[in-house]
Every structure is written in structure tokens, then in C-alpha cells.
Length: 310
Image (tube, rainbow, N blue to C red; front, side, top):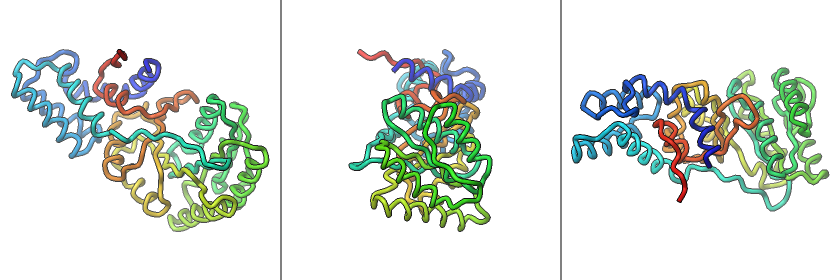
């Protein structure tokens, strides 16, 4: 748990630093006052925690402050983290396997979200857990995506099914499922396109991939996760709405949180769509794709240390 928490703390350092700067180091030990409460409110809005979550956090801190006017910043941070963890109850995605292998995970999202690298990192993580993996390079529209996934697959020693640029993505998915099935693989991870000539074309291609997979297995894909760039902040919520409406998402992977001060947006997505968060991308390396842990996230955001287990 301590290693996981350090990953969260390091990966969310920019969000923590931005909140600390706006609150003039409130959580470092300053005494709470009316001005620091206003600063904290602004900081939480700037980090994209949204109106509802920010209001709940401030309400509990203000109530504690009225009860105890000597309240310190670190105590306020503990209250804020507890409220945030409570808001996120139930948000931790837990990967389940299908009754019949392979379990299919379709990764969906716009170009630039980190979807292709996440495909490889997820494959590597599952492989470290003793699972057998096949990757499917179904972003055939973007030449760089195929080459990028090939490079990652070679580097991480992962099995890959791919085609030429401009090939039929659904055919690649069909072949990849057959290969994974014949070889007895536990998981098939499908990297999908993030852009075609129109949004309608993209959504139709995603639907075609689903239809083709369901010819093999009516329950596939068992997991359909949106990969969203955490640095987009509240704009990521609109992406989630569109893909969820048109494809029926089952979860989220949030990437690039190490490079942004807007680490609160995932809370808004959870609150509105109730999509579980499976992994966070907290760096460039394969091991920086970490399973989401609500308490670690909440405490890291407020600059707190992990709580030792009893």
C-alpha cells in the first residue's frame, strides 16, 4: 500500500503544488481563517473538482472551523480528504474475467489521450500478474498508432495482431480474437481509433468492432473503457458523455495526471456517469499505470501522508 501511495503522491504532484500555491501553503500548517477558506475554494475549482464536490468539501471544513476556531490547515486537509474519499466510494474498478477466454477489453477515446500506450502498459501489467495477453492494433486509420503499438509490444514482449494502415479495423479485431482463443490467452486488449473523418464514422467503426467481436462471443467486449487525458480537466466529462451514450462504457482509465494541475476532473465524471475508474496514468513507464485507489487519491490530492494500517 505504501508503494502505491507514493506513486499517487508523485503522480499528482502538480495538482498538489497548484492547490498549495493558491492556498499559500495552507496544508503545511497554517491556521485556518476566512481568507484561506476562500483560497481553498478557488484552488479546488481550478483543479476541476466541480461545484458539487467543492461545495461539500468546503461545507465540512467550515463546520469544523465554526466548532473549533483554532483549526489548522492539516486538520482541514484531513477533512477534505475524507469527504473526497466518501464521494468516491464505489468508484474503484475491479477487473473481472469472462466465463470463456479471452476476456476482451476495448480501449476507446480520442487521439492524444494516451490510448495506444495505455494498451501496451495494461498488457504489461496483466502479464506481470501472470495473465496471458494478446493486443489488437485496431487503430488502422492512424499509421503512427500501429507502429507505436508494435514498438511497445516488442519492448514489453507482448503478442500483437496488426494489419496495414488503412486496413479494416473490425477484421483485425476478428483475427485477434481468433488468435487469442486458439492460443488460450486470458485477455484480448483492443486499441481502437480515436479519429476518423467525422465523429459519426468513428462511432460506426466502434460499433462494427463490437458486432464482429460478438460473432465470436455475444458478451464481448466484456470491458469498454474510455481512456481520457486527465489534463483536459472538465472537458473530459463531455468526452465521457458522448462515448458513453453511443458505445456504453463500463469504466475509465485516466492518463497524464502527472503532467497536469487539473487532477480533480475524474471526480466529476464519476459523480455524473458512475463509471468506475480502473487505472490512472501517473508517468511514462509501464509501471506508472496504477490501479485506482480512492483513499490514496484523496489523501495525495490534499498533500497528506498515507495512513499506516493497524
